[in-house]
Length: 451
Image (cartoon, rainbow, N blue to C red; front, top):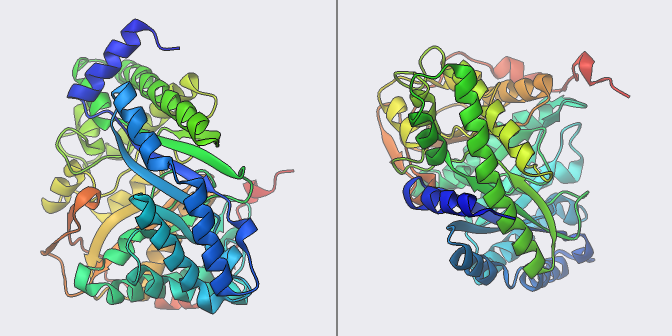
């Protein structure tokens, strides 16, 4: 139960420090929806999602009013669609459109799960499915796609990575009239998790219960505010402040998650501790790092500061809840973090530095706008680098880059809403096409051999 002081602190966090529940995400198993044809499967998928998530939005809105904590997003994640359409992969778009229609009719902002798990190999039906992603994202509005191309136990599937570079480019081309917006809804993972409530990478894992509720709670502004009271503390004490703050944030998230699951007749899944920034002032992970003493994010010392922040957030969260999961750490999306945006605009942070930071934080190269003429092989190489970091370090990494058609370094792009804005960042001009063209499987590291 919450004590009086905790309630008062939470109210203060909401009113002054941008604390919110970033998302309440309902995960739904669609395995019972598999039928003999794509048309029948799509119809069953729509009906099941509408039935299971019918009360998701009104329940979240009611909880927000009752507890006084903003719930920004209401979302749904589903079983990877490639598993549902294995018998007719070329018609997967029909299921994708049915899911998008359900998302619209339910009033959720995003629905995740147009996904494939190809971390050790790509079956023929999966390759066909992957090639449907660009058209599907171009012809839907709220549907999100993700692909897992590697893991610490299996290695990295370079054949899939080669194809995904082409998929990203084609997605940008088909959504050129929206600045390549389709790529904002497409994530390529290594070590993808089954209980991630955040988009665009959420899907409902086959090991999950029939329906679950996962909550992502976010409070970069709360953490920055807490650190502002200890400007001269050493880093040990600063980490303790972050840890205590993460504890309080997680308590709020667990309260909402348990109550939402109860009212929706679903199982309480996890609370994701990730500090997910927005482009609003006072809601930035970059500003936390600068509060720790960096003159600007991207300078030397950024990776060390981020490592400390990420670890302290996890330690505080696991003290507050035994149901911590998802990604849980600190996100560093460029277009969705005002501090990152300004650092990129000033040329203070590069893709190479962001890559180094991904070795110690949650996820990876996220929401980065790059020149529209970037070769598919270069995008594949970026994915391969991130997958290697994830594989070797036993962590989730990902790439969500947007090669914006017609744009180059010096230009900027506006995506709107939570997706924010971004300058076009320079990409290394070296050619990786021969390396990517080799294909095959990068073997798992020796430490993967555990039994």
